[in-house]
Image (cartoon, rainbow, N blue to C red):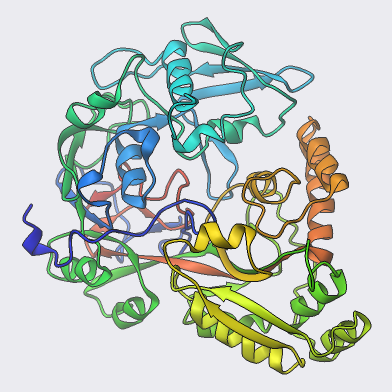
Length: 523
């Protein structure tokens, strides 16, 4: 593939899932079954090559699935490899290479049974491959993405109890252990596969097998006829790198690609319903928020935090910062996901009550700095809109622009108020990574031992209904006095050629059906 076809090809793409910038999410508008159908459904047709344009990572790109970091990396990894489980549209863990999992009574040992599946070279996927893959990820000398997610497993004590059965021994009771199996980057590779193998001749158990790879340019894969979940409809799948959004759109319009990932709302509005290409809006995707640091003035006073919840006009923020491509939030993560507390009243702007709360807190003429950056779409717009909203409640906000390169590391510890976003993950993972006393990315500095204890209680509760009730309690507390002012959820937008069928539209990024091409066909 010639670079000339896609201007600006070599510039670096958007990071898929690091820190809070992370993994964005998809969910949308299409056929009644949740697939984008290009105007009509029909019976899947076999054959053809689909070309998919993604922002990439330049000459340093790799097909090592344990190093997958960009959206393009993940899309290629899931075409070649499988995980034991993956996230459904509601972010609950769904079985993949694992046919089933069963815990013991104390939830600290889990028996996982593998389905009958083969790698591309015909060899079976075994328990030893699983243990090898997880131990490779957990190697202290390496920095593989899934390492932190696998931390609850005692990999020295875990063992194969048969060719297709693994006993995982955990360091503590973990009711949501299937989330670990579905973790970002936790792909299963053949035993003894090494870094050198992945870019020359990677062998996975996924729906497509390797043909060729030119880092920063193109990757070509072919149908794996023996795929356990049914052979793909497509003969071939090519990933092409086009870092500029305009290049991806132009390639789609010119018929050079059939699928363009990550379009902006302006592009979507310009082409939606015009008949040239299909626009797929994946709703409710990226959480958009302001983070209040709860361990320092002025946000160590929960009355000030509540006042800020009431200052926000969420619809104005969604319309202005997201160009209307999203929906309002209610100060809780994971709208529509498993365990989400959807029974709490939608919070509305109430400037009189906000002023009264600030007066009671002795913060009538409050001045506060809001850190933002052009690191993510809508951040700078959201900051200025919120500054104007706060002024109506007598609060002076000084908007401070930060560096794109260091924003995520800086705002985790510094400042008092900042713009924040997150992609899809289970509500349990959001809590464990961001809201416990020892969480590594605790951007709101929410540190409460009784809250930690509720999380441990949820994790040691075997009955799902009882566990859901504990998560509801935790969310009610966050809704009342947490540090995340979650004002919206952005749509994630992609474009396809009109002949493309079977693109799932209810699948947040990094979930099973996002960027999944084995169920797609060309009409």
